[in-house]
Structure formats: structure tokens, C-alpha cells
Length: 432
RNA sequence: GCGGAUGUAGCUCAGUUGGUUAGAGCGCUGGUUUGUGGUACCAGAUGUCGUGAGUUCGAGUCUCAUCUUCCGCCCCA
Image (cartoon, rainbow, N blue to C red):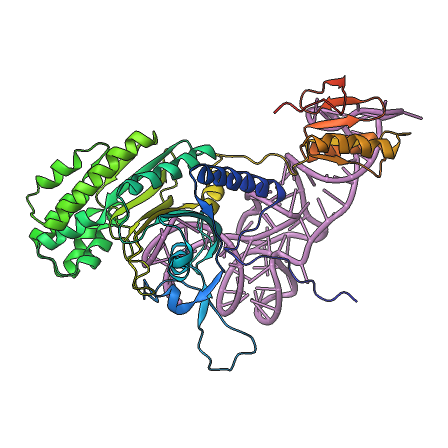
């Protein structure tokens, strides 16, 4: 009779959590939300699906591992016209362009939703992952101060959810771009992309790739020199100037970054590191760029990043809508933290109190006790079916429920210490 | 998509030069303990050895194919 059982399995890269992991994630999301809202950011959500023309509007790079969507009933040759969002920034740009007349600027929003990329999964890299983005978008001109505010808010959020040991990497694309221009390099974009790999492939690898780009040895030497600049104070500007390249964009970038870093340091105690090789993959960034890195672990990838984008919506509206924002890679951070033992899971349910069914107990009274506790905000469940007390206590223990209530004599048992004492359901409070 | 590995109980893994009933720890179930869990002790259950074919008297062990997962590249949270 039994046909071959289907092996229950998720598709690699699409994470799903056990209750205790999900509780951790929920707690993180709640705390992040609280931080964002404390700074006045409002929440929006956008559809998981966008038109391909929107998704590809700012990076026509079809090399990006993007999921496209079609219907099973579609005509055979019908071309895919929609896809799953790749990040939250591009849909946000569309949102702002579309609803421009209904929004109040500068528009401050946060968004916590999943994104999809068809990449090869590995530790901290998934095909579906949740991002928490905060962005500020203005009309015409967005003050530079916001470039400092955004990382301060994001770093505060990271700290609130238990990532104390982090560093903010910061740079400004105008510096590297202006520098390259000043050197007479034509393929500025490609050059920056290669320099971004410095930490990963080393100076020899970068030199090799830049040589393939037909840069002169002199140009390559200069590029490597600037990309290797790495400071934890404002001295980066002097170090860049010492390389002797003159360029207007370069100067603008240095001034912006100096102002930004100064303000950031006064807003936030999370250490920063000015890293000239930081460019980031998305080509829509036009100025400040950030990455958040875990320190003291083997995990080298960033857990978040972002930057300033002055023209993100330019393909969708004639209005000028400059913005700056950052993204927190919450799935990655959680996955890595659990894997590296930076965090451990706790309870398997939100229950704070389990009302147990002692033999001879009055079920109405049990439910009444539970309701009294709930009315005061204490999360309470009732072991209605009864049975052996040992089994009920094991249930509480397995789920890591901190308190058990014996309604028959109004005793509360602390499951951690084993202490038991008489309590009044109208006034008792769990110790947090 | 390309390159390199991996695959044995729910989990982490052992399994000698192919040899008969495939193991450990953890977890799980039950008991010691008729109102008290978590510790301890005792007992027990569990596997088409990833899948399919081949070599062989005999395959978890060898060969081929296929799939899966993992690690790089690409890309990036």
C-alpha cells in the first residue's frame, strides 16, 4: 500500500527555523523595529514581485543571480516580465517615485522583508533572506548629515540585538572615482570594482586584474596605494593628498567623508574604519558607502551595508530623489551567530507560565488563573489534558517554560531554581 | 554556470586489506520515582549504509552513472 514516501526537504538556501530559532529572530526583529521607530522611521512593505524593468533599471547587469517569475499556464514563448526582488533598495526607489506626491520629505522609512538571489548557498549566504533596511530620501538635495545618521541608527540596532563586537567600514566612492579620473583612467567603474576586491584577492591579484584592464604600471601603483589606505581617524585625507593626485571629485569626496565621519563619531560609539578599498557591488551608490563587519570571528563577509545614492529613481521619475540607506542582513547575522556560537537559542515557545493539571484540579479554576495572568500581560498556557505530573513538568522543561503554576494550592514553581512558593494570580509577576 | 569534496540511526560520527546478525556518543521512549521536571542509574527502540546499475561466491567497503549537501569562483546581506 505505502507508496514511496516523499522526502520532506526544503530547497537549499531557503532557510526555515525551528520554534526556538524563530523566537530569536522575532526578538531581533522586534528590537530593530523599536530602534528604527525611536528615530521616527515609518514602516512600509512592498510586493515581493516587481517588474523586471524595475529590478533591472539600475543594474542592467543580468549577471546578477535574479529569480524571474512566470505562470505555469503561460504561453510557451512568453518572456519573463517579473521577478523576485533582489534587495529592498530598488523596490523602495520605485515606491518613492510612484508615491512621490503622497509622501512627506525627507522621507524616512524602514522595511523588513525577504529578498531572493539565486546564488550558491553557504554559511551566511542564502537564496532567501530577510533584510532590514533604513533609508532617507529627499527631494533635490539630501543633507550630508544623514550619511552619518543612518550608520549610527543601524549600529545602535546591531548592538541592541546583541552584536556588540562590530566595526563600521566607511568610504566614499567619489574619492576613488575622482582619484582614478585624476590619473587619467578611462574605465573608472571597472577599476573601482577590482579595487574593492583588494582584501579578498590581495594586491597581487588586483595588480593582475588591473593590468588586464590595460592600466599603466604607474596608474596601478597609485591605485593600490590609495586602496590600501585604512585609518580609524581622520588622517585618511592627508594620506590621500600625499599621493599627489589633483581632482575636483576627489576633493569633494574627501570633504564629504571627513564631515560624515566626524558627525558619526559623535553620534555613535561603534568604532569605524575608513577603508579606501570599500566600493561595494551595487553600482547605484554615488557617495558614502558602508559595510558592517563582525570582529573577532572567522566570518569575513559583512553583515550589512549600504550607501548614498543620488540617482536611484532617475529612470522612473524626472524628480531628483537622492537617498542614503543601509541594510542589515538579519538572516546572515542570525545564521552566523548561531553557527559560531555567538548566540544560543532559548525557549521553544513564548510561554512564561504553564498552569499544570494536578489530579483533582478544577479545570475552570485553572483557566481562570491563566486568564488572570494573561490580563496582566503574562504569557500563559494551560495543560488541559492532565496526566502524570512528571510528564507535565517535563513538557515545561522541554519547552524551557520558566514557571509552572499549581492552581490547586496556588503554588508557583521556578523551573530554573526549583523553588516553589504560594502566590496570588492577581499580583504575582515573573522575574525577567 | 564552472572547479573540488561529501553522503552510514533524529544529530555528530566510527566501520580495518570486500566476509556472514552494521556500531558509539548525544537525543528519543520506558523504568528506578502513585501528584515534581531538569542531575544520576537501569532497560529499550531506531537504519532499503543517498539512489540506480555493475564487478564478485559475497559490497557500507571496489567501478560507473545520478542526485544531495558542503567548500571555492561569480555575486553579495
